[in-house]
Image 1: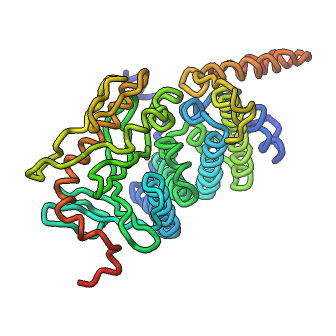
Image 2: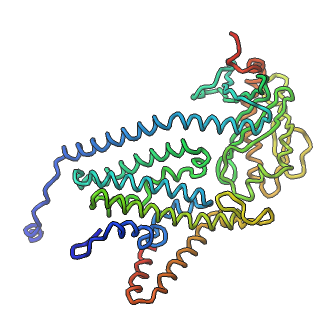
Image 3: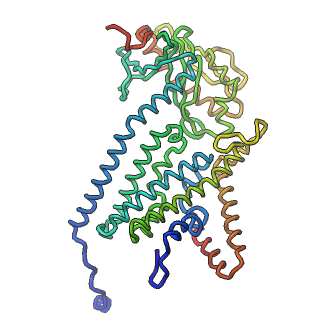
Length: 220
Length: 235
């Protein structure tokens, strides 16, 4: 989204925005409900990330396509309708792919409807940009969200079960650190990652770095 | 107030209601079409997945089974299973081996555990009049604690021959399935709870008892009706 007088971001910048500068998990700290709840294993985290990314990309594309014909009075209703449609599609698709995965993700698939990343993107970006740009930005955000979930899920699975993607890493003698797959573990790991990200940003030497750090704290 | 009124900007152009309704109508139609096509496309794979998941669960509690048929036990007798379960009826699965002989009956039991409902599938042997195995369908119990109900070997031994004989009038179980404190099991109808996972192990017992109390009085008098897979039965 560009303000008057600001340079219009290139497509590459649009794409990278969600992966690094505005990463939904580590920078914007949005969508914490699925982030904390389903990241008990790397597989769950990646599936949830991809499901959310699919809804994000398809709904941003459709919203961007209809953006000029939707009166602003009914725009939120329209966005929610479109988002809910793609969530329903994903819901059926996951049931068709794997019932075990569907059971593991549980209600969180349906809850993608109210994921604030998606409605936020729809309102702040897709509704104001042409389809190409909106889609690329949404792909970047989706990948950024999936990376964020994977970062949590892999750490929690390694410590909490001694496995990664179901493959045992430490042999049968490993005593799992069960708290990591319980809700408190989600907060510990998320806290750890946020600490690491903010530390990395604060280390950047040039002066403008100071601005970036405060940006990182804005939504915490 | 009057001052404010004079400086108030002229109102923004009002969108006619017809435009809003039209937009919502168009978007809703597109969305409706998308949902219906997604449902139609996934209908078959989802049904196939559910069948595979059911067979896998049943084969796990009834080793040696090769096919599964769904039935309903109703007060009027036994019928083939359908998607809707009428009131008073209990759904169960009959498992057959390669030759088509009845290997056992499987049914579902559910009861509230520590975190959420624990759903189990248990195997019933009409010959032994006993439960011969149990498997978990779904649960959200604490990992490392509640999951002992399917990892603890001593606990699973309870279900190798759990007595669920019917009383003389065939109206209920002769002895209700009961979960007792760890280490105090004396009778074949009692389940020895897991020390440290009492709530979850009690839920399994309660779920089985509730389901067996309803199912077995309806099933046992007619069990001969399901001794062969229904497809080969002549009327």
